Image (cartoon, rainbow, N blue to C red; front, side, top):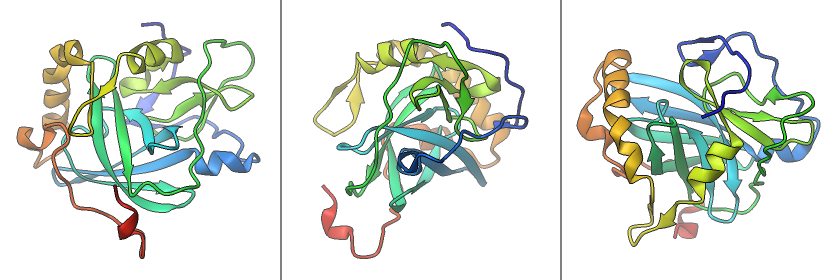
Length: 214
């Protein structure tokens, strides 16, 4: 997979990156702060909305691997999240917001990498944006960047199944042991059983929105 630039990463948080300008109000509803409980640790990362209607958020897999709860801080409030697909070799994951409520804005991707590219947030899972706020790549483990071309290739293979998770990344699970080992080494209390896809996690709800779940 092609890499973009050289990024220095310490403990999954990018230490020397300037955040993208949020002068465009839509970015506040397209970028997501993610808090995952993994073992005894609270892991902070970021993500981007790529499908507003279905509440789908793209982020890095290692920052949610084995999460027993997911809190998604969005422009419309704090939502509950669940993992609906994981690509361990590419270190990508797809999350779904619950409940799905109006107001989120989806970012589109680009394979044209000319001009200035800016990290949206100082965290793993953050999108790398061009001047038009299109996603050119996603920051993953160790400061690597997965390009949008690779992301799109993976997303194009996904299909929803009857349990409302997505399938199509089966070949990616040859790398699952790598993320299992990473989580075991970095998060005390991590259990392999917690890394089962779509394991139920405690819900975080906006007051008065329970009836909107579907």
